[in-house]
Length: 448
Image 1 (spheres, helix red, strand yellow):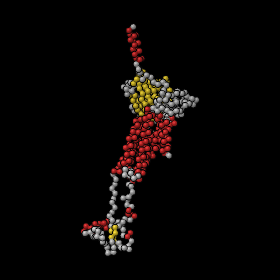
Image 2 (spheres, rainbow, N blue to C red):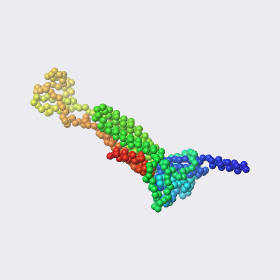
Image 3 (spheres, rainbow, N blue to C red):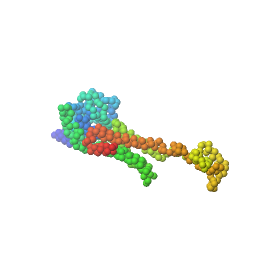
Image 4 (cartoon, rainbow, N blue to C red):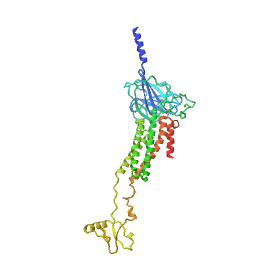
């Protein structure tokens, strides 16, 4: 009697304990997990709908080579393919016929929806620590060649790493599948064409998730830094010199806007984007262009500093010479800049004799001639245009051209961010995000 009672109480206590699990998210893909005894049910959740997702995968390790990977994808007939693969390097993983741990598809926690896709499977409990399980993830918007487990995979659109803590309290996986954006989904079956009837591209504005709000902040900061403040600094440098009360302070205002104001905003915006992208920051043209813009901005700041504080010395004008003139002589014929010989001769004669006096009694180093008075030579028009003392150095023009190029490049990358990067990463068109619509309208009006 005592033993059955103790067994019943033990079972009751075990069933009353809360289950554990965890969640990890990156880009548009999240992994939910719940521990059930000696097995773990993993649920891959993508914000891409059934007709937008190609495949998604997760692996158990910190890098792709030699890491066991579970690749899943929905098929046009409404079925789901689960394929266990592995690769010796960064190449397409191939099927493992006899994996050490076999994954089993969980239909109860899998759903194909109009604006998200969830695919779940079970695996044995990891033998390593459960509070920091390393995972890799990847996804593609290109569907594999067929529903076969060994179908050819198109290279991923995005990938990365994270860790998941399986010791957190969690009662159950979301069976109705709530998209990471917070909008509920609707399960759909395949139509006659094998695709859902609702693509999810039309409808009300979505509610932004935490990761989407982070990227929204990234977009605002980079737009303000590169497309508002930097052009303002250019405007100050170009036109404030003609304003009386600013002409002596234009550089201070220009430097303050371009570095003190723009710098922290640009660095904060770039850091948010880099933090979101993680290890795949140079995965596509938008992220590569963002890094290039940051480097060009730093070069431009250093260039401007060097130009202002380290100016090349300018050559002085050569000394004027005097030549005798007569009252009826044309003075322009006698006004010229001295040659090296005349300057040397003049210095020698000045050192060996006293200065002559002029007819007015004024002390001078130039005397009168029998035909008339002495005259100071004026440089000719050709001599006055000496390159050493006129115009701006070439580096100043290069600084201005690079500044304009950075602004133009930034216009391109902002357009790339809201028009291409956001739909690709989050699977949501511009038409369903109020912030993106406003950014697009502002960008068009600014360009025009």
